Image (cartoon, rainbow, N blue to C red):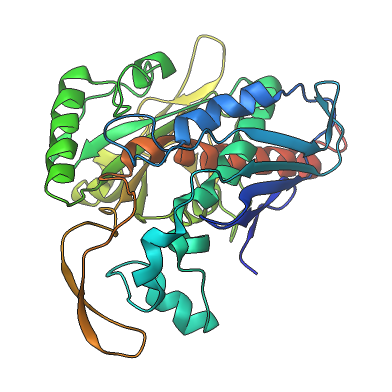
Length: 363
């Protein structure tokens, strides 16, 4: 019922923000993949709250436990269960939200759908649900790198109107992780941090854009027509909390060009491979990967829960004013980077398995 993602490499996430814990069940993982809890933990540490002055102050170590599916450091091919327990919960901070709807949050829609909800920290709509995705994404990244040399790197491209200059072909993880906003353009990063702090001090929030690239992606991934690679990528990242838009390649800017300006001309490189001279397609054509770098951008809205007073209504329809308590990110972008990377990895891993199953069975 909406909690499972993928076909052959399939994940099911579970848990609520202030419940006992959150996690993921991964089914379809190939056997004999070397993976450790430390590798998964490294990705979770990039996502966890309380990691810097521009993220939520909630203190969670987010230590992962692998409950099944891994033995002596290798995957068994059986379901992998990963659990992260919630430690720093403060359900009392959300007592007002039991009957008062936060503007632009999921409170009212969850009530409309289910007639009942966990109002503590957003429950299932909280970004803590993404812990399971990031944990599964760590394994998907390992499979992609081991099988095909795929490298996935995300970074903050824009905060409001502050945009970074980043070379998609040379950007490194070290450059991304070199500052707390996860922007490899240091000049832009400093201005972004200042902007986020100013918004936080005003009890407000701001949004922006995460760009994510996947290099060395094999040709042939994607299953037209309804499971085109970019279609599944779009579904994956648009299921993330606070995401409001997605672009691949030239995106909306491509509408300003003519066909002759936009087309990626082909050539044969020194190794005899067919390549494109430009990459306005963003690594896919006809819904199938073409071997060029996949370039995707995801827009994230300002965090819905803010400390400023806002007009709203109660579940009984009575007008009121709400200034939210609790601990919230003034900008979700720095912590969204590993989430976007995870969804990119999950989609590519799933399609890699599907491609080999359909097209290489009789090789």
